[in-house]
Amino acid sequence: MILWAWERPEDLRFLNTDKVGVAFLAQTLVLTGNEVNTKPRQQPLKVAPQTKLIAVTRIEIDKLPVLSTIQQNEIVRLILNTLKLKNVSAVQIDFDVKVSQRGFYRELLNELRTKIPTTMPLSITALASFCLSDPWIKDLPIDEAIPMIFRMGADSNTVKAVLKKGEDFSIPLCQHSYGIATDEPLSMTFDKTRRIYVFKGTAASWIKDDIDKLLIQ
Image (cartoon, rainbow, N blue to C red; front, side, top):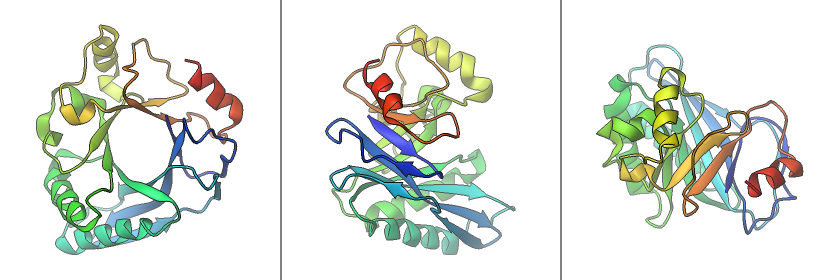
């Protein structure tokens, strides 16, 4: 199980690191015009030295961006910087990409893949609806696309109905993991061989009781 540790103070030194890892928000990159504005993590994150860490970069759109090669190269550079953070063993990107931005995103991922170590896992978050019926992500140069089975908006009922029937995501890259939230219970059977990424749906920090409840589910 992997906990998402977003922008709030987190003391996770109590985790059983044999069972639980941490995907922490390392930075938020905001695209505006032809610029990339960087917002590094502001809140403290405390973990045991042996904790498996995944550095997450969140990409957001402010004003209409150019989506230029200059921006692409700057994003790649900034993501590569997160590999210098202590104990980071994988990289993840969280980007609510629109149809018009897919080409830019694909090129960015292609470039990033060539720059990070070949053994370094690279993952992205993905709308659950993409994983069901939208094949644009099927050949991205990544190791996994994490289906976000929460905050799904208009697609929520459709996706939940499919999963409740025991059906699976059709895109192979989406068949390695699940992304869930503590405040949105799901009526489905989880494949126990897959990683589960968990987002805490309240503003409070993670506590041991949260983890104990998740591990017994």
